[in-house]
Length: 426
Ligand SMILES: [Zn+2]
Image (cartoon, rainbow, N blue to C red; front, top):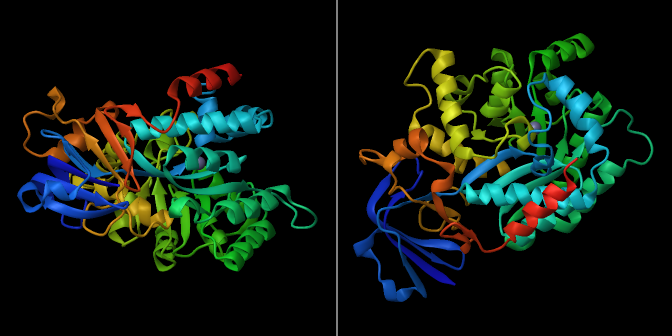
């Protein structure tokens, strides 16, 4: 299918922060084949032309750290410490979760993400084959990993078996829309030999690694007490760190940790909403970005956030860096927009995604900027980051396919998903 979007401000999220006024974006076979002034393109070369005058086009958001099925626990246990929340509230509920529950809760997350302009996400959880099914159906792009944790490396391990089956069945499936990684939960839920095992398996099958790393002061303190080194150093010792590693959080990191993350070219995912809600602290994102580390942005699961709104994450990210550095120039608009788009795509291993330019995969969104909070239109990028609204997203296109048109999701049954999730809520 070919499609041409015309008369919009095109926010490219390229390295120069280019915006094309009165622009057009042409799509053929899932790839952007034109991005430029509307006068430079012939409408008759496309099967469908959509006039989106007065609105903005930008790359879709990449939510680089999520637990989609945890929407099932949204607003169930709030205002608690991470370990109390996780071990006393969430883990007991997760024991009761069925694969059908996971399917519908994942679908709910995808419904929410698409509505808010997210076109790709990275997920770590159980029943991941059900999440993968929902991704295949809804048309999103995703990097999925069955969460792995354990002490012993001897004997059968159902989690590892599921992770490897997921890799075999879904990696690079759906025209490359789905990637599968190995997701070691954390250094506090995996023994050191277990972490080494995951690293070895990932090398064997050439899979990416996704891990929670240095999220809280307690995690770091306990790790140093137990192993004598920080979680970042421990993960490196286990062989987990490389340019194909997605490390969520990295809140409590010192200079040596940051140097190591840089040296190993690890992708760091910042989750400001979750870090604030769980009082984990403020990750030194500006310092890490200044070192040249690729920084992406994520929401974390909906039960520690409690939504999957990437606009809110962008705003929280830039505000927090301004606060922690006492410097209002920290993490400016162009930088945070790239964190939420192309940096995330790179972190997830989708190399040709995340910007609007010729030859790049057509994952893009249309934001209706014809709303009071975008006026006057001095700078649409600023308006989106600082005053934009989740519900202003009107069109979502992924891999060249229209997934949402004028607010209507075309690939999922919204009413059914809401019904099924409510029915299954505990
Ligand atoms: Zn997480």
